[in-house]
Amino acid sequence: MIVVLGAFDGFHLGHRLLLDRAAELASENGCSDDWGVVTFSPHPGSVVKNREIPVLFTESERDILARYLGIPRTIKIPFTPELASASPDEFLVLLETLVRVSGIVVGKDFRFGRDRGGDTGYLRSVSRSKNWLFSEVEPLFIDGEKVGSSSIRSHVAHGEIRTARKLMGYPFFFEGEVVPGAGRGRKLGFPTANVHYPAEKVMPRRGVYVASVLVDSQWLPGALNVGINPTFVPEEVRVRAETHIIDYNGTLYNRRILVFLEQFLRDEVKFDSAAALAEQMKVDVERARDIFESLRIHGCDVYERLASALEKQEM
Image (cartoon, rainbow, N blue to C red):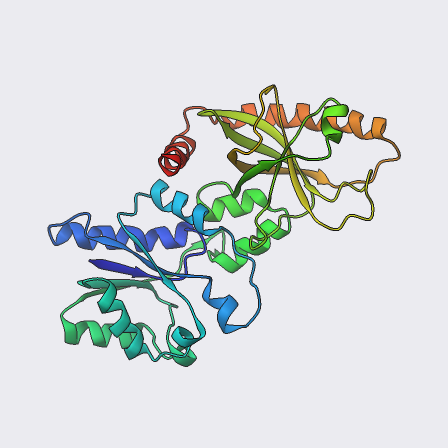
């Protein structure tokens, strides 16, 4: 198997170059599906730095993306303090117990093993001795910016959703179960799907977003609020992700849905009254509807493949 090694906090366009190279090597060697990703769980940075590092995507979300990208096989190695302290040689011994390695593909900046002692030069030498194929892929730059997970996390945290999408090749999204809320949105005429936002996931800038929501195999527009409801509960500190799915009248309680962030609309504001908030929500909803329609999501290849990946997860 041609192994693509990396932490892979999601799969951005830079990672896609690695995947394409692995698929190319496998095809050249007569077995187009004999390649896959070897990654880690949890994110290595959380173990090495001994603090929680917000991730772009959760484990289940990464699985959706792996299906979306057509990765034939994904192996997740538990990343423990013991593994962090393993030498590069010891890590490769472990790797060979998990998979029959015929080649390795990594990014040029890839480092692994104790004190980050393993690099592409080391892997090239080992591959030569073991008769493995080896390929290192140069970093990708878009508009002068190096495409990397850390920079994408920063863009999401600052509400720069469209820039994040440009670097990933698909919209930032979150998956979660719809749970009962306080019912304030319904009383205002804008019922919301309250999704439990994963604690380990990077939190987008607080505010209102245009969203796309996949419901019953159909893409629907949404107005998403990420925030703490300051108009009603100024003392609340837990950030919520509440989506008004436009023109949807069903119930989604206890169902898992995907919410895709398409565009940042405005910052969260504390209004003087519920009536003032309702008036602003009318404006937000109409803007969200118009922008959603302009995106021409229905029939778009990215969204169709994402929907297919989600449906396979639910089977």
